[in-house]
Image (tube, rainbow, N blue to C red; front, top):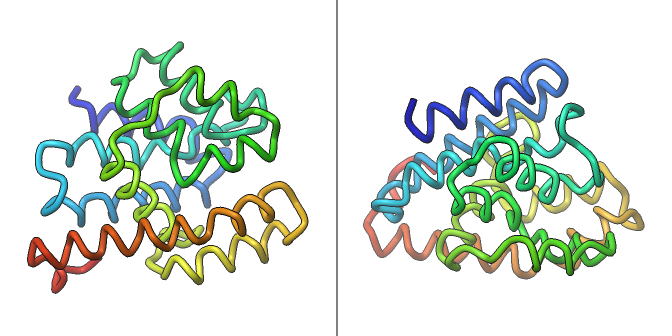
Length: 189
């Protein structure tokens, strides 16, 4: 089984039944990752695997700290022996260091998992933050607003996402710029 097949199978086993909406979101994020192939080159399969796995830390089977990037990355590393780059992308997806700081877990996240190269970090931010909870396409501004509305502005997630918003929007713009440079703008993203 190749990396992406393994990633889909694992994510489905952890999310589809207990968290069907999260599974739909993860499938949408993976679809966005496939649309980035023109700018990902040899990292396209890696990005698709990370995209479909990015939220597995929400699964009741593996959640332990309540911080899904850390729980998911630890599970992938310790239980699944997943590709280290995929693990690092899951650990740091969508400005996770800022949320880790809100939760008092920043040092753990930084110490255990190195950041992946910035272009890939941006690509996963783009995929996650331009996908609705049901797997559809959206803008990063609407996605941030949806998250604040769902969690509330004064919750851990609400505070984090508001702090992260400028970096989220900048990452999305960088990816869109790379797509334009690659001549891939006319493709569905």
